Image (cartoon, rainbow, N blue to C red; front, side, top):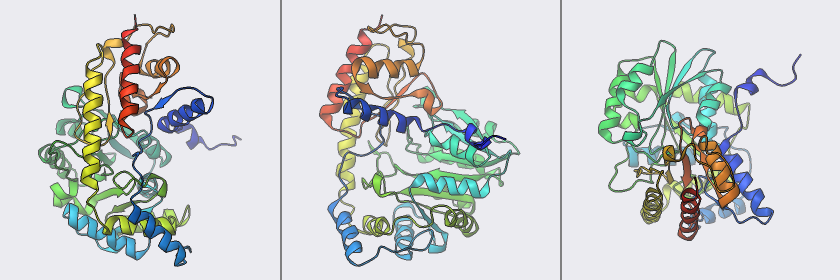
Length: 400
């Protein structure tokens, strides 16, 4: 009898976490490494949010809460959905978890049976397929089109749906590409979903407030209200409010689904950190005036990175609409050999050689389901990005 679960063999560790840990280990050994793997804003959590957490501690708000969130936070989330997305939810329709990843995990664990399919556009956030597999589901991958900035089309969605499809999982702006879907592009996809009443929609809106060049964010249930009763709208405070370590994700959806997710959470982590919940109340209810200036900083960094990378022969980097990632192609570099003697057979070999020989940590494209590419997170200082791009250029021009 095997000791470890067969389910564990279906999944792999997070490649983005692995790259970040490796970069940290190399730095600890004295190596000069620039880490561009972590999807984490370099801004500090705003002072008003930190003050709310401190006030919660002094007020003794350090006890267990309801398994899926305090009513004050649920109401703040309802108000946010109404204010920013035109979506009307009641507190009973809200789930609060220890980060957005747990929201997805709870939903899939509560709904998937063996053989159920989840349609996922690629490139995708590395955890999507593995969370589906943990829930005994089957990921069905749609390849994004490079000419469209790695976005998918409505026709591709229609072709991917089968009688076994239970969920369509959507992310805009995207991790890892930063690609954002316009209202017209999203409407074409929701029109397809309207023809399949048994398919549910899960939308990851974590990068909602990081949009550039006049791009207007929209979410599926907002674009097509008729999908409201079978949509789980997922968001969180990690990215926009620079609260990654606070671990608060949330979702709005039908009461029956939220109730089922609460049951899963009640038998796993139970409530998210009470102090983090009160901080999130302040994040959502408090001043929002710093969001736009921070987005402008990210836009400037995006432009810097795209300009530098597109000047390198063999690299093609689409300019994304949002988030804080770029996803350049290295198709023009495959088959070459690095100055250190490494054959660039694929994007994994490229990322390994780039780290070892140039001291730049990036995540290889195969981790996100579409190659040959690599992901850069530009959520770091301008100086670090400038130096990293110089090193990448030197490395690439040295390939033979």
